[in-house]
Length: 253
Image (tube, rainbow, N blue to C red; front, top):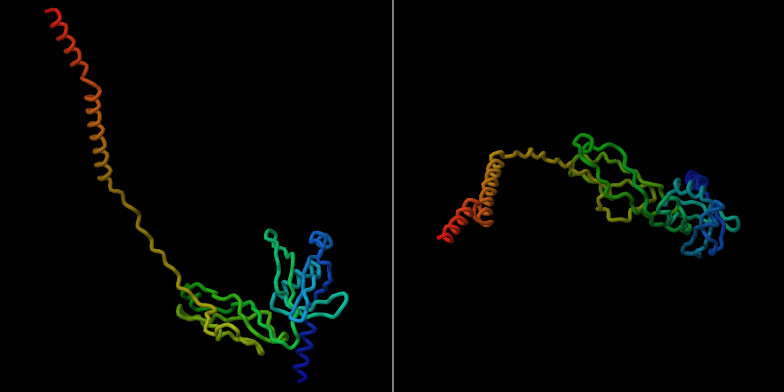
């Protein structure tokens, strides 16, 4: 009993805190950015949607540390603290800098369904010795747990992948105490695919005899076209002179 209480107190002590300030929803983003803040909002099943502002630097640190699967404590200047998850982050498409965030306020004592990132560790014989390629079919796993039991991530050992027929299923993932699997237990989480071997094509050979025959055929054709051109263009010069002489002889007679 004492150990359980100590663990709960340790979790609360280590919980990440983020200072927030309620804001006017009409305040422009450019005005906030000049002061080093960014717009955000928090809401929940029992919490009305409330516009807030947070320090850009502080939020970036908290987001990188907590991700979207760890509980953080929203600490307003006035009012009670709220436990929440980072529900969504809007990033600038050019710079990748966060420009808006959504916080989901959780209910104490209620289980949550969230997606936690998967981290693959260990060595697979199929990859190391057989040259296979590790295929991460799933990068996140949907789980359900009380807020105090939510893990920041789940580690998966790929050692069971010993050949190209081996697979790691969702039901084989070791979950922390108090965490339940939500997805289909038969879904594939990871496997190893066989490397593709590309066959080398032999170099193309050129038949020189074919080229020679084609060349001769072309020359013959050109010769024929020249002869035809001579006929079509009129009689040869000698024939023209003879025809002219015959015409003169007939006239003198």
